[in-house]
Amino acid sequence: MKMKKITNLLLAGVLVGSMALTGCGSKGSTEDAAATPAEGTEATAELPTVTFTHGYYHDESEWAPAAEMRRIYDEFAEAHKDEFNFVVKADQGGAEGIYNTALNDLSSGEFYDIADFGGWDITEAAASAGAIMDLKPYLDADADLKAGVGICYDQNLTEDGKIYSVREQVEGVGFWYNQALFEQAGATTPNQWTSWKDFDVAVDKLVEAGISPYSLNAGWPTNILAAGYAQRDEASREFYANGKNVESFNDESFLGTMAFLQDNVLAKIDAAHFGPGGDDDNQYMDDFTSGDSAMLFNGVWATGDFVDCEAGIENLKPAVFPTDDGKKAGLLSGGCGFVVSDSLSDEQKAICVEFIKYMTSPEIASRIVENGIGMVPSTTVNYDEAAAKVESTEGKLLVEACRTLQSADVQVLGWGNTFGDMEGEIQNKYAGLKEGSKTPQQLVEELDQIKAAE
Image (cartoon, rainbow, N blue to C red; front, side):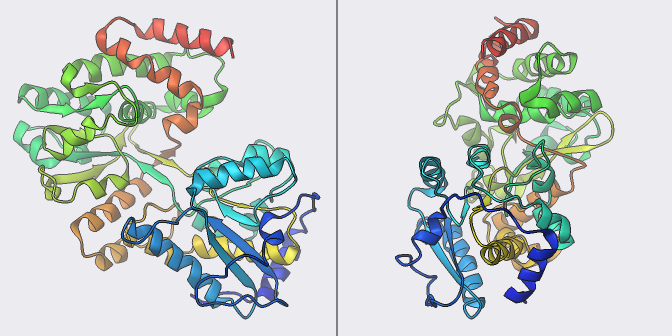
């Protein structure tokens, strides 16, 4: 990839304005003497140095995408070795370890030069401490960079107009369906649905044919379906968008979502297809890959579990949610990713911005998708070209799932990102809805009591 020289970066930095130093120390800079440069490079003392910390420590045999991400990082360092030292460090604690270290170091005024937090949200704590840099001026000054971060621009925009973090990957979630089971039941497949009534009709046809329409549990997969249904019209989308800031759950749109779960979803499956939830409850996934259920509410990464599955990977297709006003909806959660210290020099900040631009460029975005690493926020990926470069069936399926989600008219944060700490409280009510021991009205009254006690 052709990259700008550091002199051009400094000029761009001047154009968007100099960032004020806060007095916080830079964790990467203070450890540069002991840090190890990217493989094949040697740190040059007279050149500016930036240390990048990430969580892709895994051995290639353990998780091949991690090795590919390290190669991507190292190629950036190698390409710029005559301009600056870009020191790449893998944290064996992963993104969670990076997050915990940052929390501890903030109290002493330390912070990483630049780190990838992989979804662990450090921004509120770090911004409150004046430790991290606002990226918005750089995004506003560079259309290519803004296109590369995609939905992260709007999702990470704070109330005071700052953007402290963007990511090169997003958590892309819609759902999957088994085309063979739909055809067996004579049901219209999800790619043809134009409303939630189509969902109801298809589910009833599957049930009549003796096919479980889906498996769920009191957690993740039910949250996904609830979030999808919550995009059905403008009023519901407006309530959902308020998320953590809603004053009361006693709202017609939220009540409608809970009633839909109780009457149109949970009532259509037996107890064997509804688990208790929790990290170890993966029966909903096993039911889908074995061919025992027709729909799976999960993200694009599920393709890794489809290889050689009993259901037949050739039968499994990605889909996004219908709405009742002619749109398609998907869940795309960027969250906290790259965060840059505000105590760096303007020269070092320019290096960090150039790295973020590299990581969100069309070339690297395509590479992330093509190598099965995940979904990207970039709106510039050519999915036809990406699919042509992938040989495996599961790889092509991942590309198609990413394309499908990226084309959704409505792209919103997932259930947990939207409702924050209340996510767990809502989940706790699903079993009551399933058993019939709780009505939607009772559910929202209990949620409001919990919220009032916060």
